[in-house]
Length: 195
Image (tube, rainbow, N blue to C red; front, side, top):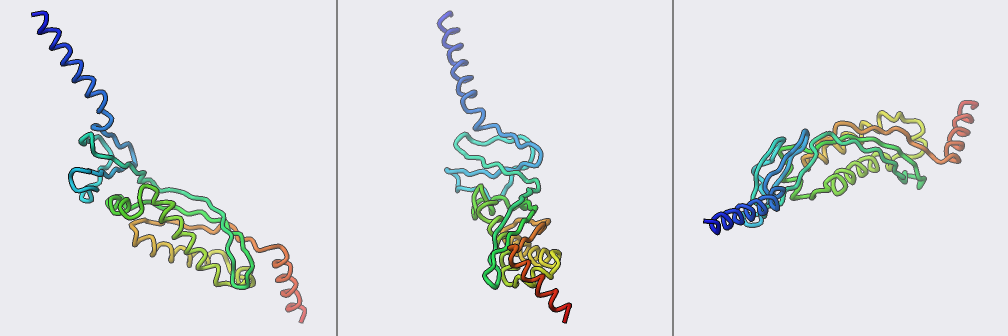
């Protein structure tokens, strides 16, 4: 009888040890504004039909879970852009974006876990460069930042929508021309006013 109790105790301890070893691979929790996609190596790869939203869920221990924030992300960045006359302009931008939650498997398959640095940032930078680089320093000096921002936002929004990313805002906070260029433009404007 004692041998049966010892064997039973050992069996229970082994089962508990296995549960403890695999609990973090089997039970998953998504907190607020989190969603996950699952890669199933023995069942067709990336599960594209389902996104695991907030809450608890179970998976097999051999599956890999990739978790994403679904909150709106904020980025503050400085860019150097060469404009039409070869002058380098320094631009400070802010933008906000979020993934389309139900499209996370598609985003993950196309761009990976770091979709923000692989897809979002290059598209935002492209839109701003495309808008500003076609202008001359004189046009940048005389244009309002709002018109440049609006053009950049529309271009980025359309390009990112194709990749299932929602851009909510792009702000051009500051556009700095080199001091010598600003001085030349101002002296040219003063001459025009005098004549």
